[in-house]
Image (cartoon, rainbow, N blue to C red):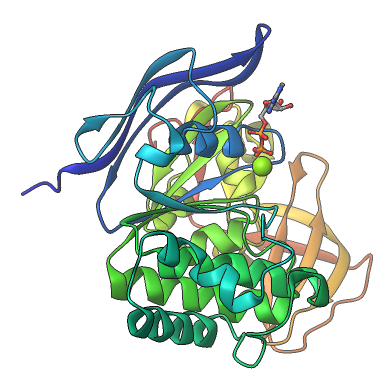
Length: 340
Ligand code: ADP
Ligand code: MG
């Protein structure tokens, strides 16, 4: 049985005076799923989200939410909540008043408002800040107020545009888990914009990777990681990213132009026993493992991971080896080719 799509974008395009925003955006988003729009700055993530929200109108294509064509509907008629980069809080209202503002407008009874407020403030770590004004909060705290406001809105669809970008790394990590848990518990549909692949990969059921206004690949995080459609996806997804080796260095392996390999699929072997000879460029201690950067004239991004603290001297020569079945072959245009 297939889940009917809750949010559908059909061949959506948006331009400004002929300048491309996004083009050919088609997505089917099931209800209760978490979809991340991922990609570098300027690739069209916010534009796609704003089209979905009704803050921009598309030049081409259709947008459906819950079976209804909302392509030209006002934002207020789309039954969704939003958390954007700019917090858009009322400066003269307290944290509590800001969070329950929408509920008050909708005449939700006070007891229910209080209960939802408490839960939302708890989730966002804002208990004790109820009476502060936005001006008395840090940027990160303001962003959490905006999150709390979206949480209490109780809409089935929630759109988020880089909501964690103002938080410090530790808080970002914990709020990330909270958002994910909340999305699951409430069964809401989240479309979440981020340029941070770790965030997208750890939170989303489906990742939509974009570049220059176009979708590059749509899939589960593990699909993008293990079967990238092209070299852009290969190099954008994963930490560290996939290394690319000119296929000449591997005797024309697979008949393609370049060959991709992930750090965990590379072994250091005895001198003369490897497929490539490289030079150590750097050792980066990450805690549970050490990332060893390697240089080879026909490759970019080559590295290996060693467990624990395992530094290697810069300039040391190493031979590396890998199995054919862990190699990804790409053609001249960077597109994935079938495994040889
Ligand atoms: P992202 O959110 O991925 O960083 P955006 O969706 O904000 O990217 O922008 C995509 C492209 O559309 C960029 O080239 C940007 O300059 C352009 N763009 C976005 N909004 C406007 C606008 N209001 N007017 C003109 N160009 C815009
Ligand atoms: Mg943006």
